[in-house]
Image: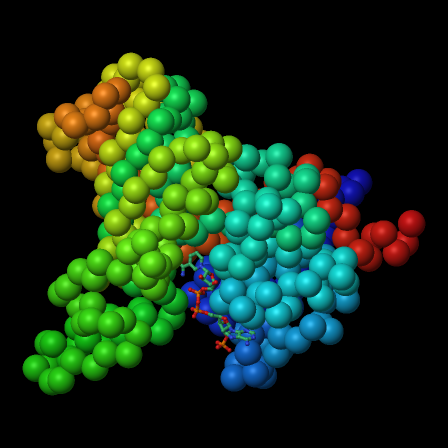
Length: 349
Ligand SMILES: NC(=O)c1ccc[n+]([C@@H]2O[C@H](COP(=O)([O-])OP(=O)(O)OC[C@H]3O[C@@H](n4cnc5c(N)ncnc54)[C@H](OP(=O)(O)O)[C@@H]3O)[C@@H](O)[C@H]2O)c1
């Protein structure tokens, strides 16, 4: 007899771009769901969403809704997460959070399952997931760190508009259409026109001149890889790409590097796909790495300005590995290992 447990699952932020991808992936990857409940703001309450042949009605997220839920994926902004997650935890619901609310809280594990899965056993009810550009970057750097010992890295990102959410995807689309029609280009989400442009600002500026996104890359990389003294410098740029982030990385290592050994390390890593044949113009692009489980790594070459340095390019789906997929992979591992018991089963014992 199949004793596989089935869970009551909630998505908080089910109407957003990350929430929508979660809905898709939960079905595609066959997560063991007994009941799925969808939550969003009062604006969306009552909306009907088709999922796996069922019609699900979106409910307004509120502190009282978590009593029966085993695991809730949070895909809302940080302040909404902070307002609701403690109640979910009190109700015995495991929170797998996509926001930045708890990422740097020392009591909350920040987990990429290919790198630090041990955090999935040491949580106190909340598991944080990394920022999208950090997650994609580390899919290239982690196997290289294991091979050569990472000392420091520089990153320049090329981030898609879906990283800002559903409104930003609409904004790019509307601006492109206005440009084609020759009408005034509307602007709401970004400080500058994003169509046919590049904006060197992702998130707001800190007093040190770095943006929130750049600081996240530094802090989250250290926490996830367990390298508290790692030196990181990033410039994060928004580009008019709909989906998938790309990052140009220059990394320095403790031990001598070679392109062949770096390629072999990337090819052997579960989170990455080696796409690297410059002679045939083969390298990853965001279009090719949209809706892909792995992140594409290519353009691997010796860095000419660093000792034991490598330069490379990585493209990965910000909505999948950068968000919904990583959260789901964490839940899948927890379910597979039996680290979470459905409340309904516990009530029967
Ligand atoms: N997009 C990415 O690539 C990405 C990557 C990594 C992490 N993240 C993080 O994931 C989270 C979601 O991002 P997103 O890109 O999916 O944003 P989004 O498209 O703007 O969606 C936001 C979601 O939050 C819901 N929401 C807003 N206020 C709420 C409230 N008071 N109560 C309940 N629900 C509320 C919205 O519901 P309504 O439709 O009812 O307004 C919507 O479902 C954010 O923390 C973001 O930083 C995003």
